[in-house]
Each structure stands twice: as structure tokens, then as C-alpha cells.
View (cartoon, rainbow, N blue to C red):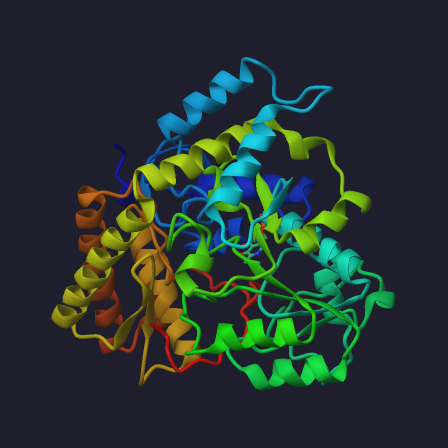
Length: 455
Ligand SMILES: Cc1ncc(COP(=O)(O)O)c(C=O)c1O
């Protein structure tokens, strides 16, 4: 294993320059831009991944806490999923005809997900959300979508960026402009603050008879919903005859093998899946109650690769393995040990950092006396020092079920060293000198969260 401490990531950044000359934006996903971990210190390109580790373009090994933006829930290149996929590839990935495997996946989802009477497929999270919105609009005959949080790149969603200043709380899409999205869509998607019922109720009253659906993540940024909040949203949706959609793309199966609905105890009308549903293979799904889903038979919702058997096989196998291995239990167990290990380090190093989130989705936050700007620099410093030491880590590490005791030991030691460097820099008033990584622009959507419970 090459030592990341002596590793020069320059070749990765040379590739990034090369990409930017011919790929607008350099990458297909904002979260794969160089600042995902540490701009200048973490590599930008990987050549392979196995389990909880990835190897960069120079073959240097890292413990990864991104896991392909949480998709690789079982770890990279999981043998069971890959064997099933390879077997399917030998028989062809799509045909002129349908495959029984589609029905198998639909039955599996219907069996597992409380709201699921019927299912449709897609190739990704944004696509699942766009399909769900189309179906909700088609089933209700109404146009307006009330949403909270991030739901992909499609027009229905970015239309919110056209709302006149003052009417649009820019919390949902800071620095993301609706360029290329028809202005005619203004007013068709309206954000509401997650965690509060009253603003949502007001919007529903203001737009009575026009709202097709409420689109939201039931758990946002690893924060538990305030007591009674989701039940209240459910009641409002039922009262106003509006389709309630849970976007489970990122919560996925981290909290339970049946998705988030069981965990929060509230059943929506539709739910959107992607990412971890297929452990890194392209796949997504929309499931929901028959009264909403059935009308989709008469809507134009159709695409060649939605029947792709690589994704479908990966999803069937991944969902089966998530349950068989008790992946949510494994994630909670590793996460608890990571959180308590980090707390021990913090007690020793004595820095004002709060361990937050739930075990499956832990987080760290610099607290008082550091303000938001200082915290951003300190977070970047911790990520920089971790990347130098072979751990791709940020303020919201996302582990997989492949992360093991050895990874935990490496991570906690690296966390300790990174915090000691940070403490020393703070003590010498030299954070700006020690922080060499450039900071991320504020482009990743960060919704306003109004909740007293951040754990
Ligand atoms: C909650 C949520 N919805 C939708 C998406 C979009 O998914 P994709 O990038 O697969 O289109 C994401 C991606 O991060 C997400 O977190």
C-alpha cells in the first residue's frame, strides 16, 4: 500500500484540468468535484474500489467515507451483487421483450415498502423524483408542487429558482440558477421549510385546489423530524387530497431494510428510491399506492433503459442482501462505535466539536466559539489532514456495511492526528497558514432546517 502521506495528488488534478477542457463542469455530479473531500489534498479520480476502500489514479489506497454518495451501502464491488450482475450480463442486459425479473423487483419492493402497491423503475434519484411528480400531477390533474430539500436536476424542481425575489427562500438552491429552465414554469414548484407545519399549511391554503403533491425527505440531513411533524404533514396531505411523496434516495436503507417509512412510522402515497437500492449500479424506483400509481398506465412515462437488467438484478440482489446481512444493524453498530470513538478523541484533544446525527448517519460540527465561517475553515482543515493520511472524510462521513474494525482503528487515529493539527493551528492563530486546501463554494443545496433535535 502506497503511503498517502508521501503521495502527490498532482496527477489527479491534471486529469481534472483535462476533463474541464472537454466536460462542462468537469464532472457528471457536483458532489464529485474536487472539494467533495479536500480540494488539493484528496484525489479527484479513482481507478478502483473494493469494500470500504478506493484506490486513486496512482493506485494509492484510501478508506472512503463517501461510498459513491452513499450508493455503495454494501461496499464497493460486493461479490454477491457482482456475481449476480455478471451472470445476467452473460444473458444480455435488455431485450426486445420484457423480463420476468422486472416483476420480481416490483414484488420485492411491494413486499417491503409500506406504501407500495405498484412500482415503476428509473435509472437515478432525480429521475425517480421527476417520475413521481409527473404521476402525482397526472393523477390529481393539478400542477403545483410544494417541496422541501434537494430532489435532483429536473425542470419541475429548478423551476423554483424563478420565483420572484422575496417569494423564494433561497435555502433550497443557493448559487444554483435555473438557467435553461422555462420561465413559464414559475410558480409551479414552491419550497417550504422542513420541520414546521404552519408554513406548509399556509401554502396549501393559498394554493387550494392547485397542489398536486408535497415532495420531501422524511429525515433531512440526518436530523430526526420534530415530534408529530411527519404525522402532521400526512394529515394535511390527506385533508387537502394532495399526494404525499417521500424522497428516500439518500435515507435509502440506512435506517431499516424496508426504507424510511417503517422507521418514521408514517406512510406516504409515493416514494422515490435510487442510490443504495442497487449498490452502485444505475437503478431507481418509484413505488406507491394504487390510486396514484394506476393512472400512470395512461401517462407517457417510458424509457428504454428503465428495463435494464444490470440495474434490476443489482437491485434485487442488494435488497435481498441488505435484509439477509442486517445492513441497517451493521451501519448502526459501526456508526455508534465511530461516534463514541470520536467523542473519546474529542475528550482527549479538548476541542469544541459536537458529534451529531444518528449512528447510521453521523456528523461532526465545530461549536461555540467558532462561527459558521470559522467552522467551515476548521472542517476543511480536518478533511485536509485526514486526506493526507489516507482517509476520505468530511463533516458527514457515510460508512458502508463493509467498514470494519481495522477501518475504525485507522479512522480514529487519523481523526485524532487531524484534530491535534487543528488544535495546534488554532492555538497559534495560524489556521489560514495551515489550511492549504481551498474551500468549497456554497453550491451544494442546503435546505433550512428548523428543528430543535439535531440528533
Ligand atoms: C434526496 C435526494 N433526492 C434526489 C437526489 C438525486 O439523485 P441522483 O443524483 O441519482 O439523480 C439526491 C442526490 O443526492 C438526493 O439526495
